Length: 375
Image (cartoon, rainbow, N blue to C red):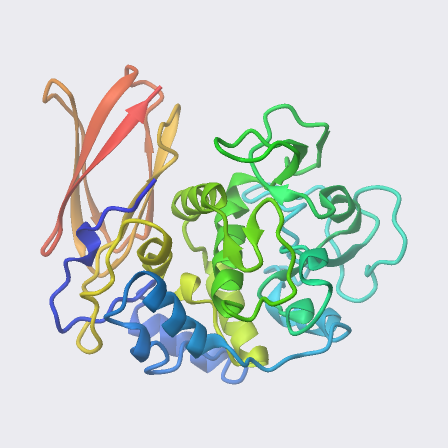
């Protein structure tokens, strides 16, 4: 499911940014957390701009390699900076239910595994890219960008299974994560773990990071269902790109990226610039992106698509005002709205007839049409 390349039609003197925050918000954050927050350093990605495909991936590899390696034991302490919920509890993507009360929460330190017999007993350290496929060696073993705090029991159920799409689960966790046979088109048969939709993008960008950080450094790694060493297999690329696009970068990921940077001194490029993923593995073209100037790159994403009851619209450059008009195939206008300074917007479609619709986005520098299927 390739990204539209419309948002790449920026002026030659513009700099693409993943998120644009108001100056007021940036200074507020720096004032409140002068030592805890360090954003992307100026010029960090300069050598990657203007490149595409594997040349871009190699340039990003050169930027993020040789990170500061921390000990595996120190992850327990680092999680209090990288994976902390607003209420101070552990942010566990295998148990969290965004927008709802999670079934259980963990306190840093006191709830570490340990032994477990059921969900909610304790949390441990999950290698989202299974350590068995790189022989438990470093620096991968303690790389914070793919080792997350998760419920021990669910982590055990995931084991070293591939990520995938599960239609008939043999196990479903309290937050809806599933284990069962992989039914994603083109995937090999076998057990898979499917995280909930809200975190699929997080894990996709994690795998893009692994494939880039350890590009050419995977001697001795095993081949498994999702990759040959650090080289992702095509079916996995297809699925991860879908997850990447349908679950855009969240504030949680932005904050985690900054926190890990403060510890490891490297970043996940696919959180800072989501377009990089499609320029490497998809159909977008980053060769025209250059350094300097103000950000004008447009990135509009609608999900889920097809939709049943509502569709979420995520767009980049919230300083711009967008007019959104929705038409059916007969040219009848179904909705019209002006979006001002919004990053995410939800459009109810539960009363619309099933069919194809076209969403027109119009702004100062934006003219784009997205197709939406309601079923």
